[in-house]
Image (tube, rainbow, N blue to C red; front, top):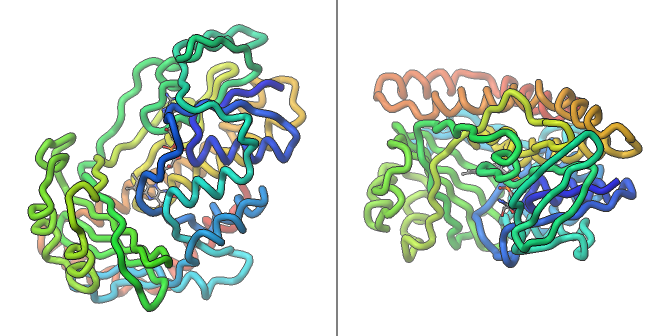
Length: 376
Ligand SMILES: Cc1cc2nc3c(=O)[nH]c(=O)nc-3n(C[C@H](O)[C@H](O)[C@H](O)COP(=O)(O)OP(=O)(O)OC[C@H]3O[C@@H](n4cnc5c(N)ncnc54)[C@H](O)[C@@H]3O)c2cc1C
């Protein structure tokens, strides 16, 4: 079986590692010229860690991260609306970890044969017939594969070459992320809800804290893209708790990683011998912290389906059939959650916070356990 994975990100590397365990060699092409320590932090939910455990990578992630304590949602003043201690869940639900994205990448690479990865390489053309996929790479090389998997993120070239133009759906809010210096006395994550904006705090455990902020804004707005540190601090000055100290620790606007939050919805992720996974297939808003988890689950299921198959197109169809309902559910939930969390009017926000405070912890606990314990 000759398999090409386009994109050496979270989904692509997980797939390469999962296939390797099944004795299937896959070639990975990655557009970046070098693995740079880019990005901010990430939380790998219980379900993601469980899958990584099944392919022997959970330890490598856990060693580089911090086990999340309670997941707290607060108002802008830092008063708790809901809190769920993830460490109090039964052991079979698993554990969640927070870590820097560069550390996650490093952990995933421990499961992949370095010789199988070609950096600084992308796709120029794909052509398929009933028996194979012919590919032309950006360095002029050509190749033939039984299957090509597009794991090349939200702006996937594999998607474009296979399905043509497909729109990105803007959520209505934009986002900045940064990693600040700071020690926390516990490993609790905070998501502080303001009016039309949020401030998230995730301790990474190594003297660093990952922060994310959201703001209702027009799409691709140059004011947000080129924001000064002073204006950024002003936008989030209404947040209390640990937020002022974290904002004060910033030294330059260059530390801010900005992007609009967009989604991808496709009627299908598979065409013949080409399949998409992760953000290339179904980029989602990050409100449930599940985008990477879904990419990891996709990779696991796809590797299971590809092992021992002769009929690649049927296998890829089975992969989509196994994944579709769960991914659609998480993507839709995440979008709806974001709509409410981004409410702007004062009475609506007061009502939202009041209702959130009244909601028993058991509701959040049940939802998380269901997500973690579902068969994938
Ligand atoms: C603000 C924010 C916060 C988030 N927080 C969380 C979280 O806490 N938990 C969580 O589970 N998810 C989170 N997510 C979602 C998560 O980041 C994505 O869902 C995840 O990275 C998707 O993985 P992927 O492998 O599909 O794509 P990516 O991680 O984007 O990887 C794609 C890879 O393909 C490469 N590539 C791109 N184009 C090409 C090309 N043409 N040729 C070759 N290579 C190419 C890229 O360089 C990259 O290495 C968050 C997202 C955002 C925006």
